[in-house]
Length: 92
Image (tube, rainbow, N blue to C red):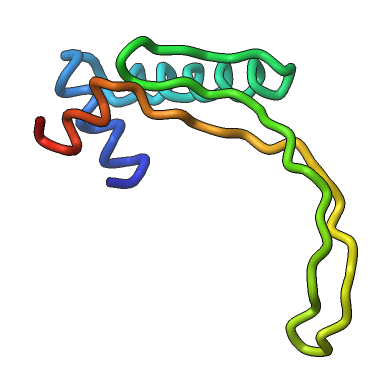
C-alpha cells in the first residue's frame, strides 16, 4: 500500500475527504519526526513506539579493496512493534 492508497483507505475508514485524510497523515508524520529528532519517544500502546537510538562507531572493510576503514557512529530512528501489532501479524 502506498501513500495515496493509504489516504484513500483512511478517508473511507473515517468518513472524511481525501484532502482531510492527507492533512491528518502529514500532521501525524510531522509530529512523529519532530519528536524523535528532538530525542523524544512517541508511544501508541499496542501499536508501537518511535524513538531515536545511537548506532556505535565500528570498523568496516571496503569490499573492493579489503582495506579496513572507520565507520562513524550516528543517531538513527527506530520503531518497536507493540504486542497487539505483533499478535495481529502472527494471527494469534
